[in-house]
View 1 (cartoon, rainbow, N blue to C red):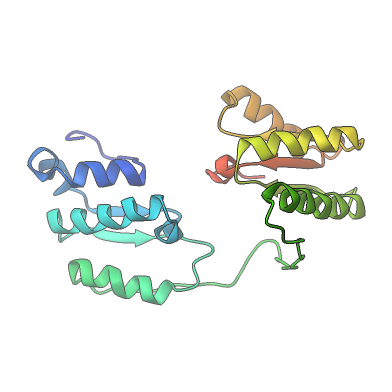
View 2 (view 1 turned 120 degrees about the vertical axis):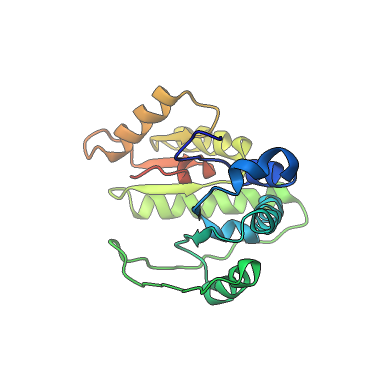
Length: 205
């Protein structure tokens, strides 16, 4: 850390290091700019706390560093900018843009609610299947919260004759790269890619 010009850490690592200033203050105090990608993680139940505490403790160690937060989905950016200013007192700017290379359209689809979570999941699967069938020629990403649901979806789609694949953190890097190439290809036949948040980690499709 002492000799590095660029340091990349997770939110949890930032939190861990900043909690031990006696050991890490020497290099943390030299940081000129702290860039936080996916700043909206602050709102996540588990990871958000680590990021928040990490930023607070980092600011106590280094009052001079610029903090830059990046997010494509944060709706309360001005509020977060105000909070960041309170950490180190620096003049803070909130820069926003509604430009996107691809226009996003939001559609809400109802899911049959049931006390039995398996029935609820079955209803979700039915809705996803209907969307895929109506858009067979389109590239479709299906995000899931767990590997279990992802694997079940692939098995279900296979039985229905729909070609799909599951992208997750348990795959080796060459396996992930293969799926990325297949999904990008217009002639591979792979139009449905089911994925966990692993695909959100800087992967450009």
